[in-house]
Length: 435
Ligand code: SF4
Ligand code: SF4
Image (cartoon, rainbow, N blue to C red; front, side):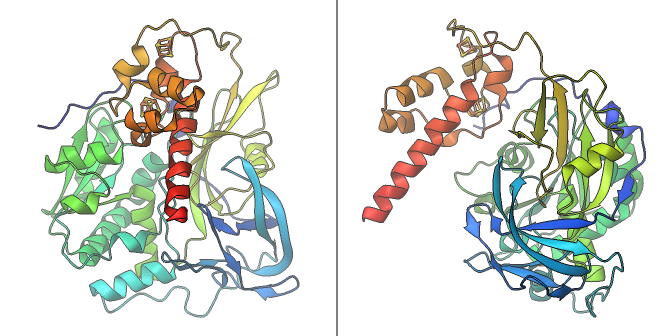
């Protein structure tokens, strides 16, 4: 029998960025294309001084998840330099100077006529579409299995506090979202699709229902208003009443998020590569929180300036790339926005956030959605007992941050479990290398 979702209702703090319309900012003077995807290095195929067109391929991922990466603007390549990335470190990026002409490659805008599985997959691959929900995994790879999928699941839970990019996308582009879902169904052979959304999002549910009239094979999957109801495994279990160990494809599910489905629509209907996206800039440290439609590779500081800047008495603050539960604290706002980043959050530091000793209350274990005992994993890690950390399930940690969130002593327990998980992964990788 499947276990019930464990989670917690968290104040969403979303209203602050949903009231204003999406602001378009497509004219940065420079954009930055990271030469990494996850831990994989990308190969640049342009050099300093080259002129490039909007949508031109400028780098390639060449491993088994190969795909191209495109220039978001027309202009000239300045060179390769190290720039802060949302993964909280500096990485090599192509710096491209915008000429503001928006001159695009010739086939930009060409609709795909041949709507076969193979042609859609090829188009999605060539447009460089990757998951926009945070992981950045190449989308076409999910469509490759020859066996038809049972269901396409669109993750519209957006369950981390503050983030509203998917909500505003649904409001503004529901038709594109539905078209994208239909193309994903064609690419995967799935006879039906479900949009997973929290049951409390009444306005969005009504909006989606009004656009879904006549689409009998697309329905809504209502989720409880808890964090992390948007966990992929939970959505799949909730939809199919089946569980899996590795990937959703094991039980016939393909999961994409809202922004990814819209990007698939743009790829199929306009041959538009992944060069633009919506990102939320919000938090109590920002004067006018809002959502921006931007060129990927824009610097965060430019968006913060357009959001009115920081509040006057900000003082020490957390600058977070991503959500407050799973994002990375970054030391600077001089950071380039990558394709998988959904939000920038600025929070004044709370004076109460001082870590105290663990009092052994067990709350972290009570709320862990992966049914782990974080304190035991931490103890094993500190003692250097990496095998024990593995036995305790460190690899199952989904890095949701809930254990730290519920801890009354403000112990950075998530950090310890994630370090234990990384240590287990490294040990296993080293063992494989050794043979
Ligand atoms: S971060 Fe990991 S250990 Fe902590 S609650 Fe989430 S899944 Fe459990
Ligand atoms: S919730 Fe915090 S104080 Fe309670 S057992 Fe977990 S780490 Fe210790």
